[in-house]
Length: 106
Image: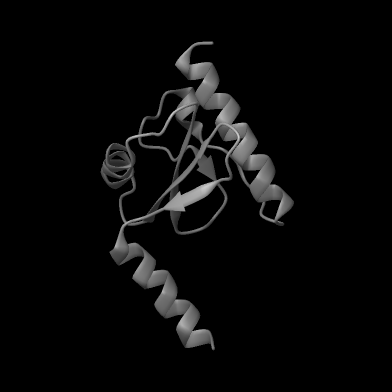
């Protein structure tokens, strides 16, 4: 399977998972040719890079890609290896923004 098809399959899988949590998400428009578009759209304020692979990904390369493409949005890499759960990795400064917002709501 080529990498584009594998990427699409991972993105659709992630969309299904996020939708099961009640979020209205869908694939980004990068499949129409816009490389700066997030892989998955529907979590306001978050630029999502989606990585799905058989082996471990280079998370630092994935974060660098998200940083290049995200503009002012918070950057997050949603990733999963075969037979493993979905994980989310993000830069510390973005996580602090989310945590402070949660803390303020308590």
